[in-house]
Length: 93
Image 1 (cartoon, rainbow, N blue to C red):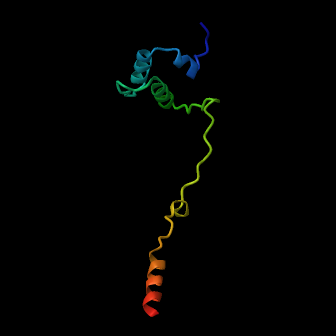
Image 2: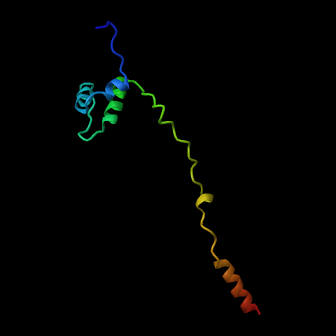
């Protein structure tokens, strides 16, 4: 065995069974639920270790979507005011 401690790597954790990951997370003070996904348990282990995992290269962050403004959702004006104008003209004649 080497004298250096084994680095906590995502690939090493991904090779472990879900039950092993549950045991590790619980031993570190975490409380993964019975239906927690394997990837979420791995993320929990990193958080408990104080490590912020890097995003995988193939999961590039999505382009930021701008917030929708009222102009984007504005309802077209109805013909109600125009109809009132037409009625007023008809009575004026």
